[in-house]
Image (spheres, one colour):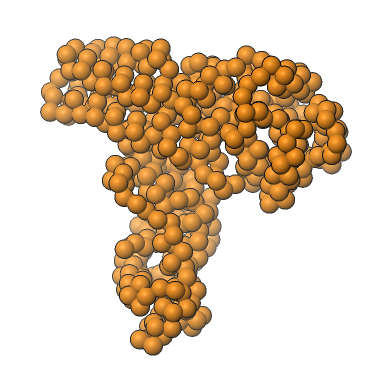
Length: 447
């Protein structure tokens, strides 16, 4: 996430290493690099210029106190400016005073609009809401079928009307259906186009005027940078957007869209797509994104992902098993599968402070999880629950059954034994250092 921008900002801030004071000369030198980094990230030119001027003004007027280094002070100033640029705090989804809440979703084809509708429905369902999806992309049968499949996957109803080419009529019938069957949120997937055209804008504008949605969210591909902001502005001028959704933030995102959209459009980013799975949707936290851009990690998001997957009571039982030296391969397999649900391993590690830099040229293959899983599944239940019985002949059978080598099996068993010892030592004492009282237990496995 924002790897190039992070690297260039880090280079700019290196100008202060070894400095004892902040001067106009050294801040000017750093600001030239900061401005270049922002422009390279496809940030709006006017925004980049103002950002640098604000950083310079606050840095020159700042007093370096105590043991604080000039470099640390400038990093804090840059961090604060990044947070302000992206909106200061999370912007919550708005709900209508009386049900149903109507959320209209717009965007170009290929932006991830329909997938976002499914992700949002699942997210709201997990929070106890009763969402319903409405297929108003009347030009693309494939989009309607995709929405039906997404609804089926997450067990959320999808309202469609075959042959009806009036999107507003479909939406109004969906509202009546929602009121009748107690669905409190209606998510309307509108028609997308490859490019902006007048017919498209007029159609979606008429739909908006007829529905008067509580939220009008515009979905844009974060990988296209400044073009995403330009497209969002064109829609906002006709629809009065209430929020932006950035998709594909897990890809090779330069950062221009995230850093420019609020200043240009005046509307906040509300959600970000961080993967292809239906669980890969997160609220946009400006302070956390700023922290990741500056290589300081994102521990809070990591903790939230873990808490969403790990059951507190199960974690307590697991800790007791570890204390009694009863942790088995069966337990390990359960933990491994839980971690996989949290996202890619590289993304998770990248949330740890300083790890983005360490992982820059490291190829972390999530398929390593699959190899470990295959080895464990090739064991009998008795072998998983009592690894000590796994002798040479059993290891050979396990290797053949999992399509791996005996060396792979030996390595896993050895690392499992070492990990079990470490985990047991971490659970000793009055308060577990492994679980920290939070219900999170994540055994590590690596080569």
